Image: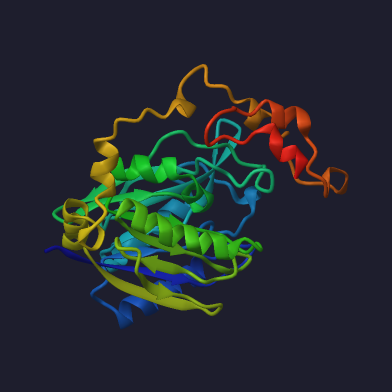
Length: 311
């Protein structure tokens, strides 16, 4: 049985440097809960969602994060920052060990396009090990909406998913449902940590590998210390969720092939959805009369047919 203490910090985020405020919250957290071993901030906590704040690797923000990690002898996931590289901007999460070293970096794979249109997508998954404890994976905000991301991280052995978010849209309830469902589907802890003000509307959530909510936040600043049990993750994955569904092993032993990912698959339906752009008034329609698209759908048992046009 391996226990490890992780704390999320849900705090007010401004469109400025928030490093001083991050330090203050971290000092308070470690004073109240000195047993915490890893701390997670929300997405873009250091400067808010301001692409003009982008810095190269090893810049002032990462130097400040190194000092925080060393001061408190903790693993630190400081949310994310905008990284400038080769004339491009990435939404990047550094992972720092208790010595203040950046052990890995993760670049958000799925920017919230078309609303988040200033950053480039990353293309590498990120897992890291805490020695003698377990393996962690990182997914930033919208990444968790794509089960392929969670599938890859858990197939690489991740037992805890760190998910810093900046969420304040009307789809927030769906965000929270996905965080809970992802924990159950992939039998992992999920730390879904949001900010406030420019950093989100709160409601951070921590879920265990059985899909049980361990903490549900509100719309105030919060310190969220949770002790995770890696033995529980490993037992759930070996014996099944609550002794039942062994989903990781079922996927491993599958016979089905997912042709949707194969070269040559017919993506005519998806291509027919139009460009990835903000909706406009002109694109609104109350009728359901795209006959050409309907007729291109596959026919047969269990498939939609053109008979639906008569409804």
